[in-house]
Image 1 (tube, one colour):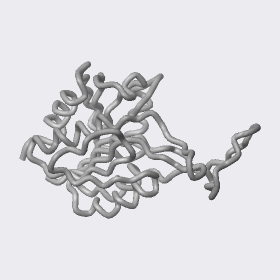
Image 2 (cartoon, helix red, strand yellow; image 1 turned 45 degrees about the vertical axis):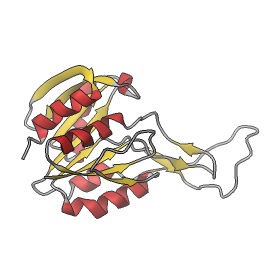
Image 3 (cartoon, one colour; image 1 turned 90 degrees about the horizontal axis):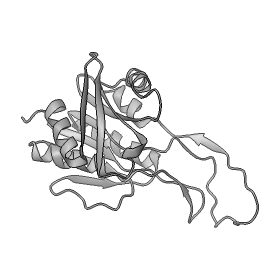
Amino acid sequence: MKILVTAGPTREPLDPVRFLGNRSSGKMGYAFAEALMAAGHQVVLVSGPVALKSPSRVKVIAVETAREMLAACRREWPGCDGLVAAAAVADWRPAKTARKKLDGSGPRTLSLVPNPDILATLARRKGNRQVVGFALQDRNGEKRALMKLEKKGMDWVILNGLVAQGASSAEVVLLGKDGSREKIGPSPKKILAKALVRRLFPSP
């Protein structure tokens, strides 16, 4: 199988030197890509800015903004058999990007507009392909994750907590649209990824 994986944060520029972003390290998405390759799958990894080494034998497409990530995914999705959406895409971007560095003095009001929903956009054209996403929640986690699964058209959602941001280890709950529930971890993210791949994308 050929699997499309998204990973890392996106950065939405305010001006030539500043951006809106988040704390995602990309470790889980990269671990997923490595585990999929080790299981015998082909992988296309669309990655936001991270400080990680590219997995060997994986096609990596580097992007910065949410719209760049969506464009790359749209190009690759028709030729893929499944999706693992692990990227932490910025929900908003500045309505306008300043061409010159903004003056840092005094208060400033920012006008924000929503970014495209990459996962939901791809899931609408999934057909019989499997779509897996993540839900990072700090309260009412499982309820919110299941709402996200249904709203975005996923087959599986992987729930984790805020402590997973930037960490090398994590504990997750795998929730399926069929009502299944499985707790995995706590384990290093590379071990977690291998367990999830065995469950979701068995070796060909």
